[in-house]
Amino acid sequence: MDKSAYQVSIENSVLTSETLCNDYEDCTFLNCDLSELNLAEVSFSECSFSGCNLTNVKIKHTAFKNVTFTDCKLMGIQFTDANRFLLELTFTNCILDYSSFYQLKLSKTRFSNCSLKDVDFVETDLSNASLDTCDLYAATFERTNLSQADFRTAINYNLDPSLNTMTGAKFSVLSLAGLLDKYKLKIT
Image 1 (cartoon, rainbow, N blue to C red):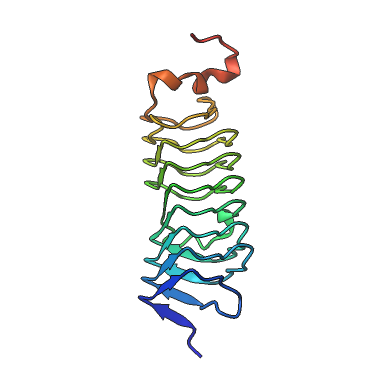
Image 2 (tube, rainbow, N blue to C red):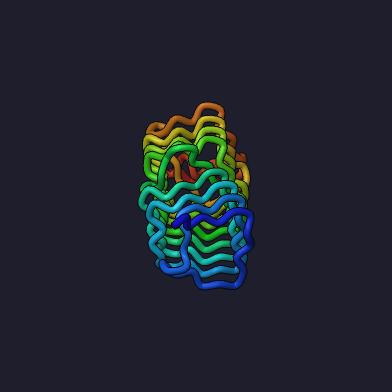
């Protein structure tokens, strides 16, 4: 039996493993609760999530092809487990605290007005990414490709230029302390 959904809008629902489809294409999820759900092997293509709770979802081999998240709670997600083929994500006004993007290719990904506290970006390709008005408190960057990434309006980041590739990355003069923290300088 084909368990696919095409061009549908799912609103104000609590999704369960029984109501879950295998494939979603061009679907909209509005104010839905998917928290703690096992989304293993599910495919989302050209989908949007708005006002949804996806806290602690399991995404083993889950496909996210051109998927947008707006006003969503995505705490504790191991994006590392997702299907990496054609992975394309956009986040606006989202809470992604305690999530992991370890070793993912997220070039050109847009994070806008997001909370990224304690997020793992180790060995992630964030080249040309935008982190517009994002809070990066205790986010981990190590061997991360930040070439051409835009941090100009990001706050609370702590990056070691000797541990990351940062050619052409953009920073605000007012937040340069986040690049020099390891030197214990007093910048006023």
